[in-house]
Image (cartoon, rainbow, N blue to C red; front, side, top):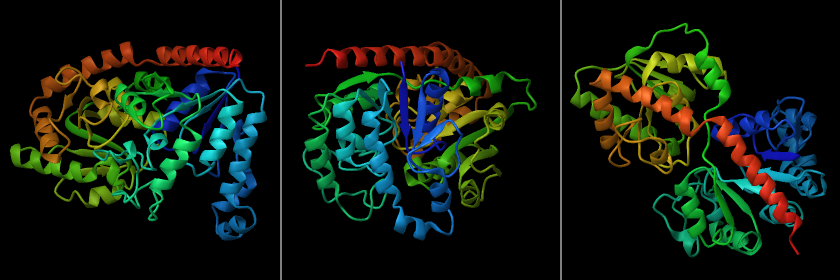
Amino acid sequence: MKILLVNNQWRLGGAETVVHQLRRGLPSSRLAVADGKVFPHDTHPLYPRALARLHHSRFHSVVERFAPRAQWTDRAFRRLAETSYDVVHLHNFHGRYASIESLAYVARRKPLVWTFHALWGVTGGCDHPRDCRRYLEACGDCPQLGRWPLSAHDDTAAQLAAKLTHLAPLPLNIIAPSRWLAGIVGASRVGRHWRVHHIPNAVDTGFCQALAAPPCVNREAGTILIVNRNFRDEQKGFPILQAALATVAARTPSRPRLILAGENSEWARENLVDWSCESHGYVSDVARLAKLHARADIFLFASPAENFPCVILEAMAAGNCVVATPSGGVVEQVENGKSGLLAADISGEALGKALACAVGDPALCRQIGEAARERVQREFNETLFLERHRRLYAEVIERWGTKP
């Protein structure tokens, strides 16, 4: 089978981790990306490499004037319908590098699988509606304007209408990494007639190999690792994190050391002045990230809305005691009290209480960390992940060949 994986970025967060696992595990696959200026030679750019480098330079405005990136990538995306690939497997898609109409154009002409890393595909444009249910009726007057991927202009009603017109009638195959997300897609106006397949994310084999390498560091009791794609992104839970740490400070005499890894980690350190923090910035090197996990005995996760985060799987594989908010598919990863500790609700106070339990009981942390490692190896390994994808691709191709 020839599979074309399509994504916005080559390297950034959890979606990109999943894409690289598929690319590595399916030798006949190829990756196409829409944005970025540097990526491997075997990656197909939807925007030419030379233009991409200039687009990310001081010549940005000139390039955008004569070769607008969104228009170029939209045309390139449409041309995927005429390629020889058996399946086009779409990942991050927010209507930026190709329009909703172009997505429908390709899906009518080529077997298409779409992994939902968030909920943009069934809403008026937000990734995580949280408690908002307007997408079940008609969006508009959106409370999340200005928060990625939404702009400051409220076009949510038009976006939802376009999805209902162009995407809802199509026989799309959606991969939902969590049952939580699968349920939301299936109950939505846009996705209620789609085929939704539950395939959990898996821990990256490369990360596991890095963990298995001879250790250069020792685990430090009471050390907390926090990995965040962008600490300044409110969606990633920094306000909840601050409140949780304040709760711990009020409940326990000890102040654990914090290890911060992610974009704007220095900003986070400056806003946690009462704590001893290490700031490592965004860590793309797997071996370096594995060493940070090897030092920590607790992994703190504070996001208020998530699907099935890869960072939690990595922490579990490393034997960290995961302390997390009960958001989205996190409750499907972590068995509370057995393979991790979940807050009673999505709040800083509740997360802080759970964290205080971990900080005050190193033996419990070790016990939970070992159970977490065993759970990941058993339930969320890459072999299962790849086999489930192969079966789905074969099913989609067979069904496409028999359609009238």
